[in-house]
Length: 437
Image 1 (cartoon, rainbow, N blue to C red):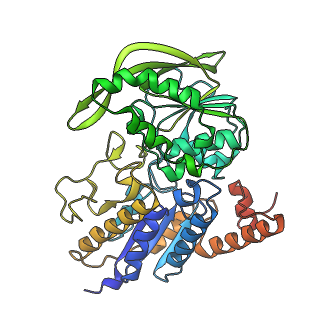
Image 2 (image 1 turned 90 degrees about the vertical axis):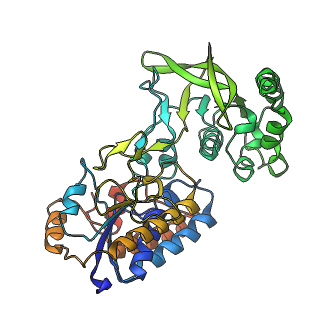
């Protein structure tokens, strides 16, 4: 069997897609990589806090290396999905031997609470994409105000709170945490950027308030305190007098507004219960309200239900009896020849390193699948005709290279560590794919 004539499609050019595509291209498989965005990188480009320049540049260097493989073709500015430029079914009909879906989790996970449509209620995905200059989010106007609540207790909550204080100049940011201080999920490396703003008087008062609930399950309150405070010795210098504080054992129950604008967040008090060896939050029915100007939900993501694969909850449905498991994990969707990796397999799971490993494992499963098939013949004329008929600019890897060089030159001119064009129009103009207005 001539493996070099196998031709597969990869959808999504984040870490999972790029590293998965690289593995297959290195083994002689021809790979056509489709990306919704103009630039590759996904969450590595648009999800990491802007000031982490060294980390992002290290990843970009690896991505450039992947794109240089002659077996890999890149098409950016193309949306695959039922509401996109090309449907998954159309793509399957073009004769690819297999398809790897690594498009991330592009849906927004909401709780279905009253007031989610109020001005001032936001999803963290939009906020993170906006401050990382991903169009069209980079052009959206957000109403944050001076007193902001962030729902969640992970690294994304820390990033969003940091942005609200340092960039949006909020006076107070409140982290609403459904469980206790012992169950927070952020790392001390992330928390060091925010911990300096922690209001210690209110922190001690909050620990005192939840002490009965911690005692009720035999949890040492000092454990939670240390988990949060361990980053204090490495705290970033403060840039303002803003305050950060926690509301533990609290779940959002709804948002209240006036004239369509959010003014209050309603919280339900929780207790802690132990279930199946894990600490869970359980609502008590007791509710209270706090005055806020905005609420940002940092509670994870869900896949895009309009993509074209069957879903269950926040995820695409995986084959529970996979033919090609890797480390006991199924990377096979319910559609023949379509594999899933990264956040498309398990939404909001892990960071860039996880996405890289998961995309690589998905490519291993796909490679095993290819061993069972005769090389297919992709109808490249149909693909070219379809893309030409879209009447929109298609971005190639040569265009990406040119854009990176232009942005690097612009950063140097402006004396910045990094510069990004904030709209698709600007990017397409500077690389010559559309005329300057």
